[in-house]
Each structure stands twice: as C-alpha cells, then as structure tokens.
Length: 227
Image 1 (cartoon, one colour):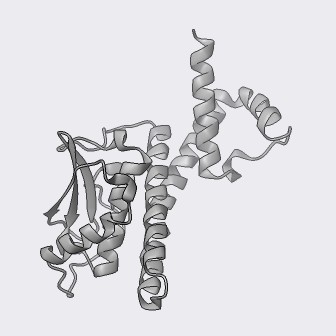
Image 2: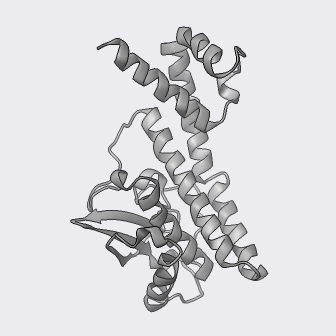
C-alpha cells in the first residue's frame, strides 16, 4: 500500500505526488487491474474486486481491504501518474494476499494506534516485500520494453527511497534495537553464540530482517520461560 502498514490514510512526507495530467480513466484502470491480476495465478481462489477513491497528494495511492468473503483493491485514481504507476500500485496491493492475507484489515479498519515498534517493523517489512514482489512480476512482464522498464525502475526507486517503506522499516528497526538492548541485552550472548558463531555484531548494523528475527526469537523464548 502507498501508506505504511495497510493504513491507506497515512500521510507520507513526500508531497511530490500530484494529480496526473495524463488521463488514466477508471476504464483504463479496470483493464490494467485485470492484466496485473494475471501476473498472480496463485490468487485464482480469491474473490477480488476493484474500486476507486480520491485522495490528496502525499497520501496513499492504494489499499486493500477484506469485505466479507472477498477482497477489495482500492485505487486513488486521481493520483495515478501513468500506466506503469497503476500497474505497480495494483501489483503491490495484490501481493499482500500472498505475503499474509490474514493481516489485511476489514473494510473501515486501519492500523491500530500506538502499535509496538516490533509490530510496526513487521508490518513495514511486509510492505517492503510487497514492493519487491510487484517489482519482480512487472520486470518480467516488461522484458524487452526498455521504456517501461526504465519507468518501472523509477517507480521502484520512489518506493525504496527516503520516503519509502524501506526507510520507514529502518526507523522502526532502530526502535526495536533500543528495546532489545534495554530489555534483553543480557540474552544476546546466547543468540550470538548459537546463530553468529560467537561473533558480537553491532545490532544497529544488522539488517532489518535479522533484527526482526532476533526480536521475535527473544519474544517466544520469554513466553516459553514463563510457562
């Protein structure tokens, strides 16, 4: 989604999005949606609808919600810049059904306020993966079309840049590292001995996936020790 963690309403600091002068009609978006859906054959079992909404520059371009026994991809049609932007936005939303459909909010819901940093890191890593999955599916689709590939790489750079999910995840990673050091610093030696060959890496230098894994491991260990 174009706002962290399925919110669909999170205002990003990037305000460069402007309603496009290039007219992408709702009819165009329906055609594009059906084409992108073909890139995800594993979603055939799902009932997926497409709807539209209007949004302001800097807000979400897309979101996905559960509605009964089906899912609804909602696109801010007035913010879509061009066909590649539309395909990437739709492909990202559909990727959530592969990454973790159970975390997709019901219609009318968003991200609960004041989530722990670990949950926010988990959510934003899912967004990073959905960006990558959308990127790879479209990269294969555009093979041989250098014009579309170049635009895709631009769009992916926008998503991985300073105002993208990777940066948000890195910020939450720092919060999770601080929490680990305060609460579980004495347990890290055991983890380093078991999984890092006794090395003592700086937690802040580890990637977001490894920090997430350490935090989850410490969390489940705590649950086991309390039972």
